[in-house]
Length: 413
Ligand code: ATP
Ligand code: MG
Image (cartoon, rainbow, N blue to C red; front, side, top):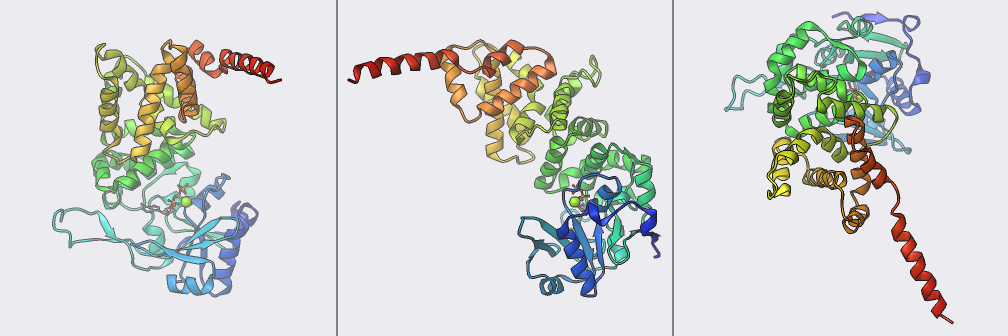
């Protein structure tokens, strides 16, 4: 298959946008007689003028050969061997050999109708490698030999039309690897692109297959959506595609219960997510427990409000959070921090005796709890006095200490 070649003078990608390390890898491969293409999200983001997080390189050199070409090379991966080329400053460039679309594993007896790919380890041509990728805008190659861009799948046109389009039949591609549905949603939210109609309809149809993926992959994709500056749009797309129901059924239950009376903008879940987005745009770093506590802040608040007075709050909270976060196997430490953050928020919103206030201030989760309180205030435009109280240093305690110290020093001579 002949690709469309975009020559150097017809595109804006320049080597000055790339790191020295990736250029070294590309040139070394080229000098040793191999094809050396920058690929995946790197080319996409360079064409869009965005910063690049990670570089992926594709080549015809097989893993064993990569070990010979690069001294600083480690082979990783069980299903498919990928080379990590490591540099002194800590940067790692991922180099993979061109490969073919994987095969479904018919030896699995339990689900013989499944298209799920379990083997993904056959070397292929550059064209094979392009067609096994998920979306057209992720399948462009930058060829260091002549600085051209190679396009087998119409990725350049989709980039210009700002469209997320599956390569091949989306129903089949999503069944082969349902994580692609979440990747597509994340990509659409991050880039502010539209999901092309056929791809979008297939996402909705195939969404229940997502749970066939390893939970760690699902969790990581969800967290990537939540960590990005576009978390609000990302979750809105998850709702529209019916995916929230699949990955966080409890949260979707709450959303639906409040969906009729409230528009998206003033829905409590989205009010909280909008604040996350604003903070991320301002460059504020937020820990995963804070993000997850923010996501569940409104249903948990409702839970607290509806509990009878003598009820075990900790137990009910635990049950609610486990129902949300255990199916995706969020680590126990993260789950217990989310639990503590919700209790801390409840405590901070209530008028508390000074002694208990002090113990929370000394707790290791205090900084995160304060952040959660701030997010909650911004989202609801309430409780500002509680925020001021908790943000201000504990003045009275310091005064008392000073006095004690003075009286002791008087006694010394
Ligand atoms: P980012 O790094 O910003 O998350 P990316 O597109 O670079 O985005 P990676 O996970 O680094 O994502 O993957 C690199 C490339 O590998 C992708 O651009 C895509 O071409 C291909 N790819 C990744 N995951 C899949 C998948 N599940 N199915 C098909 N192709 C995939
Ligand atoms: Mg990448």
